[in-house]
Image (cartoon, rainbow, N blue to C red):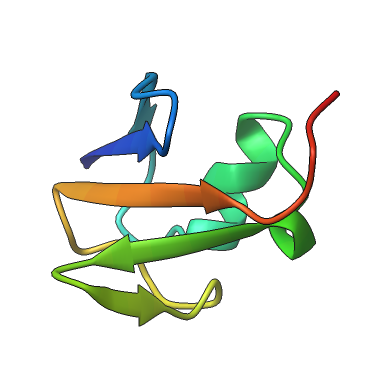
Length: 67
């Protein structure tokens, strides 16, 4: 299973390849992103981080400074 995470506003793309039962929280942690500091969106809807990854592409909005 692959899912493309596009970080907004940077436009940087991260590709997650995982198991079918993985969640968005699992993916964020694998990228070194604290799940408490990001929102995941698909089709203009916020997705819960404990949701199983089913979408092929999502947008990732950091909610705090990464610097």
